[in-house]
Image: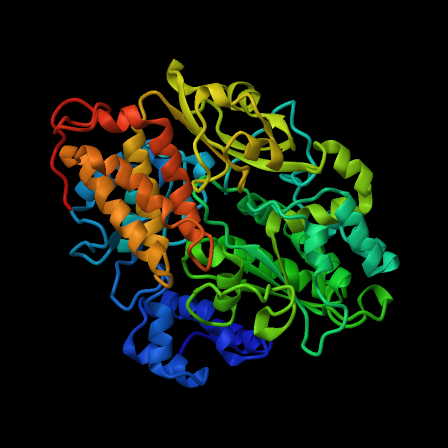
Length: 160
Length: 437
């Protein structure tokens, strides 16, 4: 299967960084997922073959890391932190607000395939709580109203 | 991009280049960048280790072990390659400091790794950044590339004859991987399951070679120590607790933020002056002084110097520098439950006391907070926690147990207030609208 040139360049370079091929696995899985949308059977077979691993070994690693997924997700994954620092400043209310606004629960995806929602553990934004990550972008010091604006922006971007 | 704050009491060492554009290598060079590593090359391994030992620098990841001492455990001769591994898998709830270092001063981490490598005779370093911090991984990849382009990394660095390579590495979501042995497993492309010790990583680490593992903030401090000298650095802090550290103030404060303060800065002052006091004019209920795994302190216990030894004496830990402040509207049972939910989620499942303990504790606390608890649950929560202590490969079990025991010990009355089917006294009044599960 084909990944982007950027992926291939990075992958080839990473293999030179370690004494074992397997060491490139975790970051490579994440970059592959970013391109394909999920870690499909095809991606798993491809990476296993490239890194001299069995598919089972790759699946074992995937199931350990919370960012890795074999299931399809929306174009934008809204990750709401409700851990202690965010909880004290309204993280749970923000999650409830997202559930209502998007009409889906934890790990649900909207019917149009635009948004997935996820309650996540600490994302390292404690001093700027409550915080949400949409894919890799941080949004901090949020209120329900601010989050509405942000989600509307993504909706606009995603449906263009 | 996380916003920066400031306070007159700050002593800026690690944060002195924040907001100065130091991600660009030329700007970093204008700001004394890559001077320390050249000085270190002239000093030689033993002198570097002695300097770092004398500076009183202790691990900023949370354990507070002497950095110079850690480096001295690496054998001089080794048949296998030696490695330096920078731990940037910051994930302890309450902690958001390494993020700022990577965002504003990535070269200081690279330079710290370089000096550590020279000190232990390693020719390869890795900088591991958690997967959620993708934008920081991009910044770091560029910084490393720029350092190679200048000839600061690779063969014969600074004409010294010393070869040194540094690479970035990325995670994919796992708190457990912040533990040093799980971090190595993850870098080797595996599940982040901890390794039994001994052997310690300094002897048998990455791919079996001796490995030094330090937190990103620890390594970022090293160039400043080499340039400024051990005495200067040590005197910034308190005895045996050299320097400054980045304190992440969060929770119910008027001015949360990451502030660099001298080691030993008074916690009460940190909350009421630096952090601007409790928000909305409420009163202080409790403080988690060093990330979610550290035992809670009561308002009458916060007149304490924030260094490793003083906080330990006060019955808690300085930990990772995450100061989480709770006002009087916070429910301790709920807070304990949210903390335990996190540890249950993050337990890798390798050690049974942690895997089963966190699961049962989350279940019990959930039931308890919902008003379906019975009196003996309170002692049972304590007992279950106590039985995780010291019984696991890595400290995740301890990290879940220690705060929970403190919550029960210091807030037993509040646990009792949840008994007999009573609704949580802190839940907001009025029927909540139903939301999707």
